[in-house]
Length: 150
Image 1 (spheres, rainbow, N blue to C red):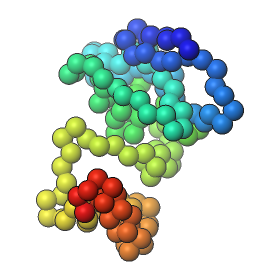
Image 2 (tube, rainbow, N blue to C red):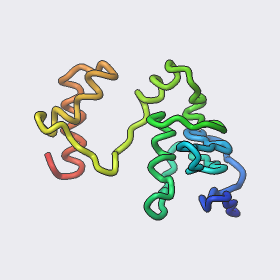
Image 3 (cartoon, one colour):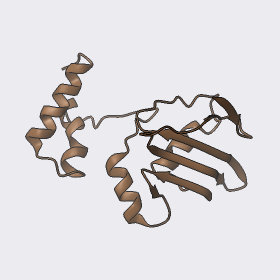
Image 4 (cartoon, rainbow, N blue to C red):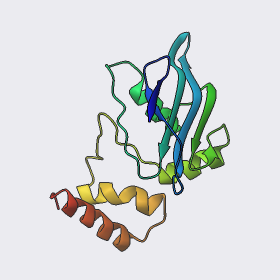
């Protein structure tokens, strides 16, 4: 496989997809401005199902902004963002569908201080996905056990 670097230094592997590859996230020539400041320029990226990637760079280089655009916490101004075949546009139905399936851990993640860790973990599954509380708690406990903080 060869590498293809964008103008801003993000490296994207290029090569032929094999049978069974499924594109989960695709950015196509994405741009983001804050007023006159062009923070993301010509960002193209493909992430296949099961693939894990790392977005790294110096502070202020746009890493969090790019991720916030994928979760539509920020709106990009040009290009395409496609998550599991759904293009993120101004259509809020599409945004809500993606937010039900895409998670993000914030750089300065803050749990709700008035809730227990278990309550914080079950909040989204219960309220957003309408998962029964006992099912959400069982899953949360399995995840806590996995990281040995049950």
